Image 1 (cartoon, rainbow, N blue to C red):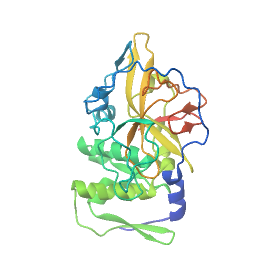
Image 2: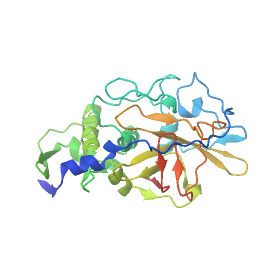
Image 3: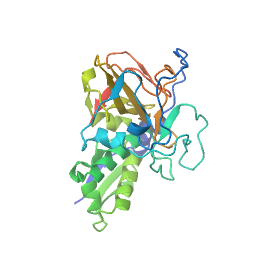
Amino acid sequence: MIRKTSFIIILAMILSCRNDKPSAKLITDQVNSENSVQINKDKNTIRERFSPPNGYTWVDEKSDSFGYFIENFNLKPYGSQILKYDGTPISTQSLHQAVFDIDTGNKDLQQCADAVIRLRAEYLFKTKKLDDIKFHFTNGDLVSWNDYKNGVRAFVNGNIVSFRKTAPFDDSYQNFKNYLILIFNYAGTISLYKETKPITENSDLKTGVILITPGSPGHVVFISGVCQNKEGEKLFLLSEGFTPAQSIHLLSNPFNKNISPWYNLDINTPETKTARYIFKPTNFRSF
């Protein structure tokens, strides 16, 4: 069966995070240069490597949750550089505290929204929630892993995209990665925004929630750890991909070095400053 839809390919590429840029606005409201956070440099997961600030403890995630998957994802050795898709280091290496141990690919595809999609898809693949592996193109088409593994492929002819079965069944991990390359080509912050739900209470902020500005330019980061004190106040770790395609990394907090890399987040604040981007307005969403 053939599905066809009007689709301006160039527009889809523009509206993805291909054009994401760090905010040009420089932030200078750094608080204290001393750091109360213990970093266990010999540990290899987010939860093990980053101790909470004094008075805080880690908030536990359910063992089958997306949050647990992120917090326990393997990291590269402490001090690893952020590398672009071509293997060269990015120019700024002072704004991250960890690099996720996952490939970027050899094309300029796995950028900000793609990094979130990659981790979400890897989680669903690992936990065998295969029916949930489906993402939208920017134009609105929903493309599922189930269709792709059964041989359905996208064909572009000018401004028209057709979907038809042309390949044999293949549920291998390599074919799963091929599926993601297709998604990375035609998805972005706009499609990711539309397929997530708004967070309306601070109490709902948890690992796996995204902070997103959809559009062109646009950007997205994701919560990668949560800690809490006895008063119920929470702090958060943030991670991201970026443009050009580069290592997924955990951000430092240059605005409050006393608790870096932890951040104080509030859904009601008009803007949220992260190490490499200012989100205005603040817009948290979840899968």
